[in-house]
Length: 324
Image (cartoon, rainbow, N blue to C red; front, top):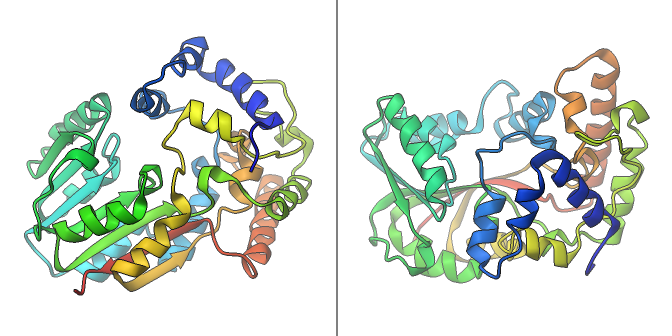
């Protein structure tokens, strides 16, 4: 466990350059929800993390859907719900509800309920849904831990990079998620399931640093700075709690809790163990490809594939069923 690292200082400097001092000052409050909401103020969408790279997105689709040109929501809708109708879906931690709005366009759904603690993000989602003429969307601003969900009501409970922000995962899954699903209902996740507070083992950090050497220096300039990324040190506990107290607070218990309470229908790993750390703050260089960048990315993909042969993936897509 690392209390503080050099990356904490470098990331703080980068955040000042990218988002200004007001963002940093927003962290100086004892209210945990306020700090979490600040971290997910999606009105600031510019980033330089691995998920913005088109080649990475295609890699995910290949690993999840067996086709780099198929998006995972289209994949699970066709495979599991193509002939289903009047479906009711609950999304917890939905943010601006982009994924849910995409699903709302499917005629299969009569009701999609988005739940989030950030009213501003839900307002954006509601506006976007109205602009698309969707009438099957509901938006609920609440902390689900203190909210009574209707039991045996939903056909799907959906988490897209939000479940790892909940505390006491086993309690949430047993006492909230499972009871609100109908018998035969599906829990669908696209999630980080790695170590709590991203406290990656030294062996993984060592491999991330080996992978960074595969990247030419001109592509290692950190986003909106002049700093060269030479090494990855990992995140310190202190900064993570200050920046967002909900970040990966109980992530390591996601799969054990789900496996205990649901039957596995499909579970696919898509890595992230190497790529997320190696490409953090430098991913913007790879949004537009050229032959040199394409080769670097392929070298990184191959490096991570070798790592995954003997290590559990940090990111997982899964479909699970309530059978009892």
